[in-house]
View: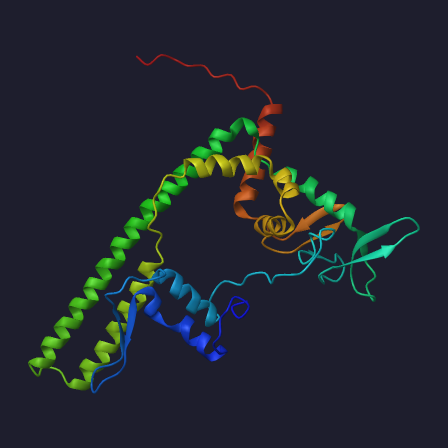
Length: 302
């Protein structure tokens, strides 16, 4: 993709570029005599955040979260890559068969298993399943309030965490300064100081890395909440009206793990926690709505 956009250099050069910390405002100082190599903050303006840089390094090192691979598919098979066989747990493939008057599309397993299901039937079943997770419109304000309060708590927690990390960094810098004084006064050996310096610098680097990953943006999210809850309330319509790529992204958000169709029902090991909570709230509210009325008697306080 980079070459198609005009990148003229080699793969090795590309690898070096995405490993270079200069883009996040850091400069690598190589080892010199007794001084160990280290990263220092440069005077230039960074092009990317430290958090983004370290996230890329985690991906290159294989330490990031595992994402679903991108699967090429067509509009008739939006569930391809997500749906598995109910008998052997293999991912179902998609293919079309030519009938007398038109083509028919099927999700199917391999030749030995022979399981298959009409794609139109499976797709409709999935859309109907999404309706279970739509929030009840009457409690739209409740969902918005809960999400807003949760966001505010997370933002406050981020501030507390940031202060804690800054205090830890300051503590290790103070320890390093004391170790340097001990070395100058000949109270510790140079080798001991070197080990302490390497350990403290590593701890400081890790803390700074963690600090850079904390979200700093505390902008208002009211407009995002309104749009997001509206999309949740019309979850199946959102799925139908989106393009294939967005629809498949929505599938992955609702179902973090693969699902199957058994006895004309969608079954999965795990659903997104937020979506699952909405389903439980809806079930509880509908139960209250059809249950017996509760009579409250208020007594005046003397």
